Amino acid sequence: MSALETQTKKIYEPRFNPETNKYEDHLPWDSPYLRNKPVITCPCTMYDFNSKTSYTQHIKRTTHEKWLDNYKVPDESDELKKEIKDLRIDNGKLVKEITKLKNKLSKKNIEIERVQAEIGSLKKKNEQLVNEGYYSCTSDEEEMD
Image 1 (tube, rainbow, N blue to C red):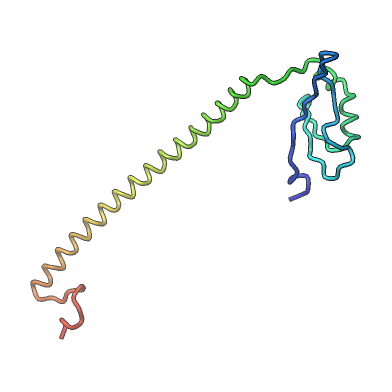
Image 2: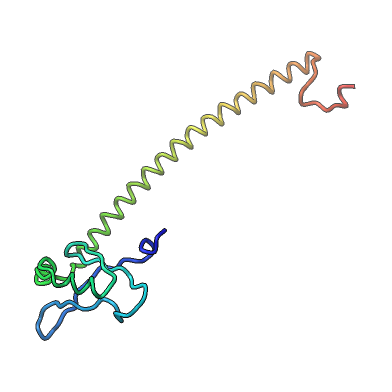
């Protein structure tokens, strides 16, 4: 795995300035001089950056500026709706897996019943052979003498 693949990604969120009543860009790290900064993804174009230089260049783009002007905090209900949708998808997958496992179990139970019936049949045949004087495969060696 490369170093970039092991880094965590965070979604960039601008800060609200109550004086101007607008959202403004801010440096997403506590210090611009940190090593191994986490990768930040800006939702405007899903652009990834992890350096002050790439961040500064990105926020100057027209696309980002338009996105910032129209930015609104994601509605909590939207997040909950997405979470519900994801949970329903996961639930559907689990229900499908349960059904698959139940079918597999049912087939195995049928196989067990068939094998038990065969064992019972073979035991009866063995008893008949023993009664007729043939050697029993279940008898001890002492009985052979």
